[in-house]
Length: 193
Image 1 (cartoon, rainbow, N blue to C red):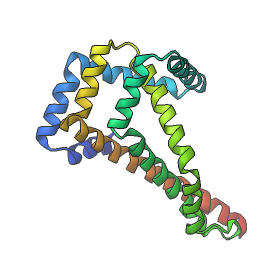
Image 2: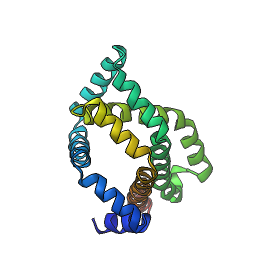
Image 3: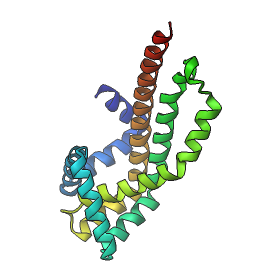
Image 4: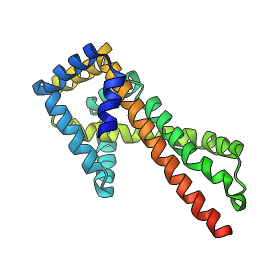
């Protein structure tokens, strides 16, 4: 928690923090924060995630205009790219310590090649997950509320907040993955002794 507070303090100017705080303390901002937090917790359960995918797919097949709104927001906010960067860095950080395990015979070049080959599938999975998550999370919002939120996200302040959040959580995920990879590498190396 301390790292999150420090990351947001360092990633935003005082004025940016004040504008963001004003938005998230408004009725709409408070509601959205609650919806996103609840949805993130819920979608961590496999059955909820599967249901979210199914519902979003059904909505897409029925040409629900909200799906188009969400897809445009994902594209305009560059959410796939920011998630992609975090995912690839985390995978790389996890795999790199394994290059020190002789019996795996894994090189940095092979890791980069593996990640490159998986990039398209990873990108598609991220985009699909984002649509499912956002369609579920924002279901209680009416169209005007959703449009207002997307407009805030696309504003200079919303963009700064998004980038600060992604930078922070991508760094946390990278460090966590690196630590896990190191533990696994050390365990495998001890088996070789």
